Image (cartoon, rainbow, N blue to C red; front, side, top):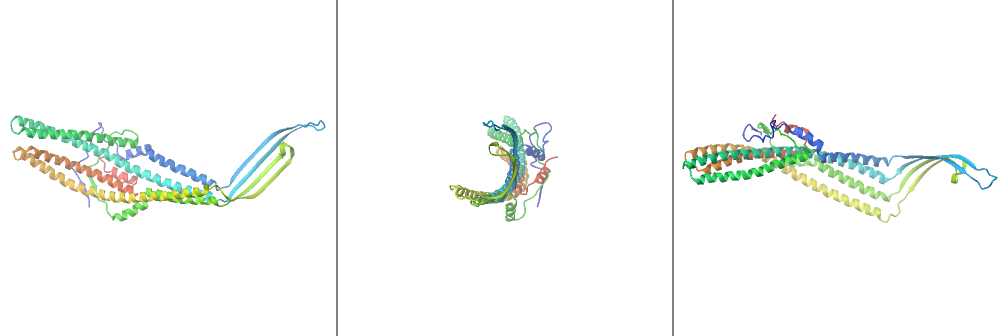
Length: 436
């Protein structure tokens, strides 16, 4: 089932320059991608995770070191029967160490693999959040601009009526109370205009916060759009959100990280076994004494058995267990929040869809009522308060329709975000709803 809006409540915005609304949704997104610090931070965290994973993996590989030196030796003797000696010395050492059994290093490597995966999930979350934020803030600017335009139209129309009523009162056609009622209505509109102007400025500031630059004109929403309700069983959507939402995925990875951290701390109780090979060459001996060149090779195994560390390992394991519980509680909180947001966004999207339908009917009937009231007022059948109320209903219907359209777009985008279904293609679809 679809609705096609061909007229009524169009997105006529405040013209900010002679070339109005040149920036579309995709253009704003490209600026936000380059400027959003949250997204940049998420990308850097992934790079940090890769580097840490490489370090942890490197600890499992052979460690090869080489050292060497040369020396100039001067050997003097107190005895005159022995000649002093001057000679050069040289030595070098090559050592190779390979962990044969070091469970702590293994679990540290496993942990950092999962940390990288956690950062990748958080990075995807940041990307999807940015997509939603661009849509939300872009259309918030359009919505507040439309609200401001409606108030301006309402104010101009009311000012004309006040002027007409003053002329009619001068001819004694109407009572002074009719004039005062309309002037009071005008004062209320002017007061509301101040609030709407503030909201419009705040909406643009929120968009500036996202892009880091003051944008020019934004392309408005087209008046010819097909709005469709969300379909399917809500519980099916919830299961999809559980499987695809990157925030949930990141928290699952955090639990896996905590589990590996526990294993890493427990493994501190275990012995470590290292293979060792050394090749040493020197032609100098103790205190630099000259001796024939010698080569020495040593092959061996080093076994280290932790016996007592003052309780450090015990408390490190306890800390890791508490971190595991924290990760589980955070996962539960995100899971419940995702379920709630999936239900909320599903229901509010379809509620906005239904409100668009009802607002169209409301606007049509409000216009007919206003036209009838104006005719009745001209013939003395209706009083000015009837006209004011009918005009107010028309502007209210227009405002309701605009709010319903913008709410539909925002709620549907939020639904796609929470179910993990939002992508650049989603942005392209919404961008096609803007005026060309």
